[in-house]
Image (tube, rainbow, N blue to C red):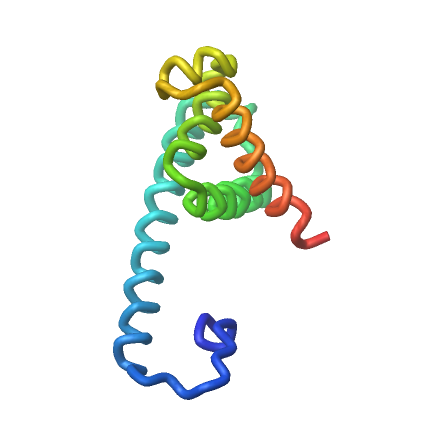
Length: 126
């Protein structure tokens, strides 16, 4: 699928190297997916049984987490960290700026980029 998506008009000069690169990327994606799933399942184990999501909800949540993880990996590390500090730790723009040692305006730009990625991910299928 990745080879077809690349849509290269000219034939590949190094097809083995290209396929090796794709395989390496797929392995990294698989390891990341497994780590994400493990963390999610561990967090579910701490929930009371009556609050646990159904199997269908679990699959939808895992799919969303995987897509979000892939989207956030495309961001620069500082933008990703600013987004996570805001969303997971609930820090204010000023607190994030102090923690990352950047200006508040830089944090605003980084968060705008991250939210744009999330928006595109959310509405890509629509």
